[in-house]
Image 1 (cartoon, one colour):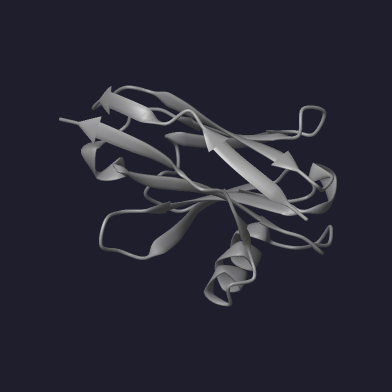
Image 2 (cartoon, rainbow, N blue to C red; image 1 turned 90 degrees about the horizontal axis):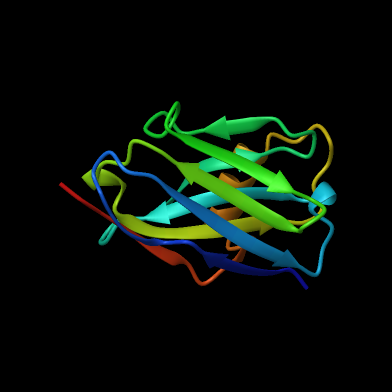
Length: 132
């Protein structure tokens, strides 16, 4: 069973940086789709970044060029480096995983679709607050 645990959230001023981490257990990171979602209060949980099995990274437009997703399979950890943070980045951030993925999968799309089907493993989330 996949277990995910996020850390690294906090409060930061606009323009600042944070790095989120997600400890992954119960599965080999090389065999699953991994990504980060965020949920702004009152809105749906949305996919913002994902990494394919071959290391290809994908982002939603609002974070492209500012956020970087990466994984360290030796440490079973997923990261999200967030730079140039804006107040609109304030949200609860969740790590997500989907098992049974293949090498040709577009993990951003896989996670987005499977999240709508309640077929994704989630962490408990970590809160990021960006003040102006």
